[in-house]
Image 1 (cartoon, rainbow, N blue to C red):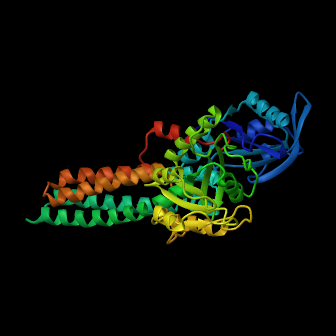
Image 2: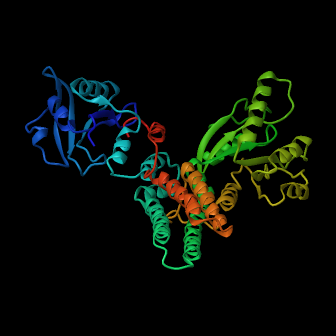
Image 3: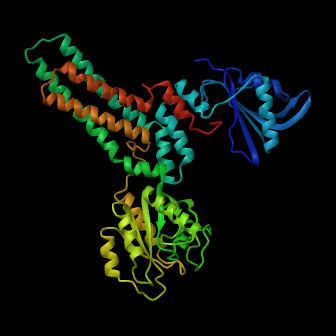
Length: 457
């Protein structure tokens, strides 16, 4: 498959020790060679070697660089690839990039390098998506899942399932075309039923990992809620080990929503410190309270903070009611002060949800809170090295659709429908599983997926 030559900056914008410009395409080496000056020309260089020299334009030295040459097919894109290591200044690296574009390269689209790796057969679609998962991973566990998906663990499992389905469909066709026995219809239906149940069991096993996989991949939107001045901002600062939120004794200090990612025992939380929820006449605080209620309604997980130095109030009861039906942990704060709150009532309101006693002032209870969060979401942990781990939302949706198609096959056989009708749903399951790896996928979906990548990847 022939493409034009693309170029892009592959390191984050800003100042740093080095910046890397990547080229990929049939003319990558030739284009770089036109502006690179050294004792040895890049056209003559062996694959996977690095060379010192200068980038020049009209005999003017623009940059001192190290240039790596990698020849097809032993590259990420399976095309000729050149990587130019420049000094990490914004002006210098952009000047080199602009010179490459004037010399014959085209600016790469977001994710185009990875897209070419997919189109050239270097990786399949699930592996391509794992590249972005690896970049965005916020915990070691999430990174481990992405790495194993990049290695093709999920791809191999999906292809094995598709082969099982293909074998069944082929056998159905043989039995239909060459009926040698009177009971061929019954034999075919029984074979189809056994194969379908086998594939469905594997799909269901994958889906059992979906909830935890989605948590690892996307993190949990976690709302920290409570009345004003119960210690919400102190809890946020304790979890992230940084003074992000303003902490004072004045009620209503937090007027806006503060968001921060934190890794709690392998569970990535997107912490949202909300304004204290109470009735107020302050216009600015009232806006903050409304935003807090919205954050509460959209949260995946809630940390409900109470001040045990005060009795339960109607606002506390309202918070318990708002959190009902969602995953939450009750954080009973200010245990360094005399208790005024009815603990039995707190445990009654919490029900099966954990209650953790803390003192943010004395930094007590943080370990117990982290353990409670981990237990809620990763009890009976799934090993991140499990080859059947699935974490991508698109994959999960396709697996659910494939499961429905397989259920339709089983229902069709049970109802005594003709085999040639039942196999339509079997074929649909085969196609749906193929969309996970990209073996059957539309161009529009590819564009949509790769546009989510960063430029230069």
